[in-house]
Length: 193
DNA sequence: CATAGGATCGCCT
DNA sequence: GGCGATCCTATGT
Image (cartoon, rainbow, N blue to C red; front, side):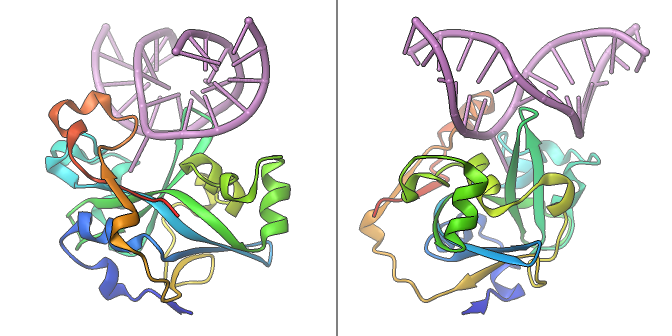
């Protein structure tokens, strides 16, 4: 159950990283309670050249500054005034790549996740969306933005879970219709188990 | 200062 | 399938 090392995040191919994050385990410790889930869905956001990215065109703002920083850091922002969306920053400083985690399957701290979600859905559906998984894991953009994923608040572990590539659907990203032709890029990975 | 809109979700019909 | 929630960010005056 080792944390992914900085060498996992400090790489150039953000699409490959998004693919390799499928089957890894996203973990949080909030109020001394640990919750974990297997990552089942990701999307790559390829920085200055990607119209779907907040950092497209090299746009540096208070919000996007995190992505221009070091790899292996959380980038969490508020979406629609309601949902905290969790990303990991990749590549080297000044290259604002990130991977959005869009779904997990709970494996530890399940009771805590169920109570946070207050949902009667089956387990596999309580964290199958970017806003839902943040709620389940207790991730909030005020408290969890810009954290080092090698520390003990939010991190990602390798449990040596084997993923059959045939079970991973690759397609266009969700909710990025504003991105023109980049909306069609096959940057989304979804593990159907 | 004012305003528009968003990498979503859940409830309603 | 449609829509309202809800508040921060970015931009423009």
